[in-house]
Amino acid sequence: MDAGTLTPRFEFATSARIVFGAGTAEGEAPRALRAAGATRVLVVTGARRGAARAQPIAAAIEREGLPCATVAVRGEPTIERASICCACKRSVGDQ
Image (cartoon, rainbow, N blue to C red; front, top):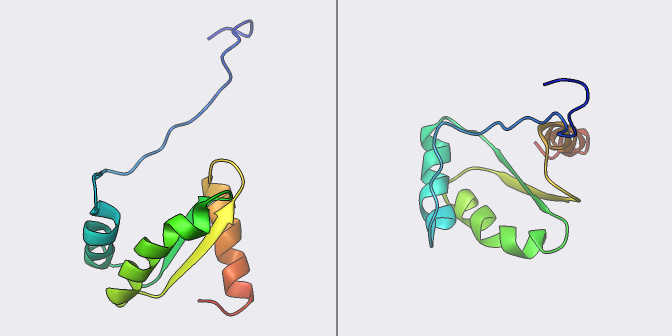
């Protein structure tokens, strides 16, 4: 692209597997996290309705035996924001 182009630079990173549908977050995601070797989970949500919407999946993850914390952020949750959230959780002893 030349410098005169109006399209801003952006990146799109995604996982190797995306699963969606009714009940998937509470049903399949916790087992997939355990199978992938997760030892603890941070659920990052949007600020407006995030906490309420994250509660069912956080509960399902914890039922799978994985400690789970949730955090809400404004805008799209970027890798940088998720890293900052992890650091904050660790700094207050929430491993």
